Amino acid sequence: MNIADAMRTFRDVRVAHVGSILADGAPHVVPLWFVWLPDGLYLTSRKRSQLWRNITRDPRVSLVVRRGEAWTEQAGVLVRGSAELLGPEHPEVKKALSAWFEKYRSELSGLGFAAYTEQVHEPVVFVVRPDHLSSWIHARELPT
Image 1 (cartoon, one colour):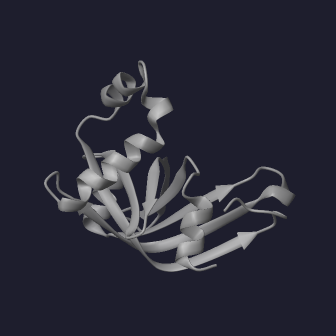
Image 2 (tube, one colour; image 1 turned 90 degrees about the horizontal axis):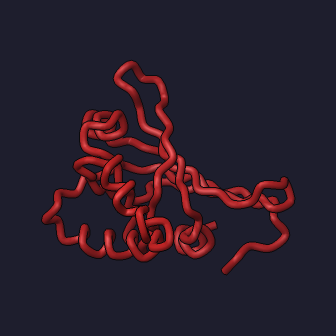
């Protein structure tokens, strides 16, 4: 599966599991909301979170995006790349956040946005541009 096919197949999945490297070399994995745009996967996290500390020190990350529960429904992609933290004035941030809010509109409606901002103080945006991609498909059909 190439990157364009992976983006089309998995862009509507709600959660990516993001792996980064702790200072002692151990893996650290967290589930995050994301948007997959043509120039990369954009994610948000809290400033000073463990993930933020990890990618500030070592930007290498892996992401798993998957769909399906039963074996015959499962498909997924493993993306490896480097995370680039984007400052609030970075030209890509507005486009990424617009797509992010559009994707998660139902979760953020009503009290959802207040709950998100209460839990995620000082959000930061980062992009992962895929260096390597591996996929698996057990599903008979995938969405296009």
